[in-house]
Image (cartoon, rainbow over the protein chains, first blue to last red):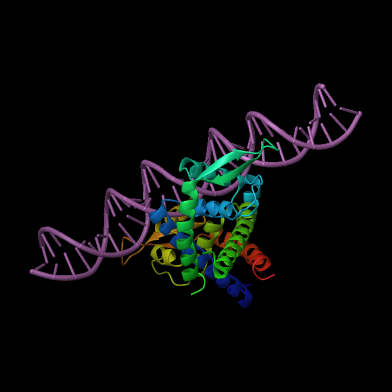
Length: 126
Length: 126
DNA sequence: TGTCATTGAATGACGTGTCATATAGATTGA
DNA sequence: TCAATCTATATGACACGTCATTCAATGACA
C-alpha cells in the first residue's frame, strides 16, 4: 500500500514542516532576545502596522492569520500589557474594537520588522 | 524601508504558514476523530513503523522530527498509555530505549496512514 | 580503577494555544 | 418596542510544548 507517491507526499510534508519550524523558531528566538516579544506578537503588530485605515479590526485580524479568535485576543492582551498597542472602542459598533499602535509599538515594530525580514530572507530565499 | 522584496517575503511566509496550518489542522482533526490520536502521535508512530532495524531509537526519533526531545518523550508516554507502542530497554546501552509497535499500534498505524496520505494529497498536491 | 565530563531520557514548572462558554451590543421581525 | 437571534470579543479550564533540571549509565583519562 505504500506507493511511491505516498512516500513523496510524506517527504514533501516533512520538508515543509522542517522549513516551517526552523524558520519560525529562528525568528521567534531572535525577536524574543532582541525585542522581548514572540513571533505571534510580532505578527499581530505587523498586521496592525500595515492597516492604514482605522476600521474596526480585531475581527479583521482574525481573518488574516491562522490564529484562533481567542488566541488573537490573548496576544493582544500581552501587547497591550506591554504598552505596544491599545484597544479602542468603535463608535459605530460598540462590540467591536480596533487596535492602534502606541508610539512604543510603532518604534518597536519598525526595528523588529527589519530583523524579521532579514530572517525570512535568510531562511526562505537563500 | 518596506521594499518590494520585503513584501514578497512576507507574502511567501504567510502563504507557507497558511498551508502548513490548514494541512496540519485538517489531518489532526481527522485522526483525532477517527483514531483518537493527534498528529504528533501519528507522526511518531509513522517514524517507528518505517524503522525496520531495531536500533536504539528514542534518540534517532528526535533527529527526524522538529519536536523537542522532551516533546517526543511525552508523545511516547501517551502512545504507550494508549497501548500502541512499547519502550524496550537497549542491551548495549542501558540509558537508551527503542520503541516497538504493539499489535494494536501496527493495526492503527496502517489504517491511519491511509487517511494521512489521503489528506496530504488533498492539501499539498491538489 | 576512580574521578569528571558527557549522553539518553524523564520530569516539573511554566507559557501559550484551543475549545466551549459567557457577556454585551446589534439586528430582525411581529 | 420587545423578544429572539446573531455577532464581536473575553475568559476559564484544559492540553500540550518548551526549558531547565535531574538521574542513571557511559566514556575518557590519569
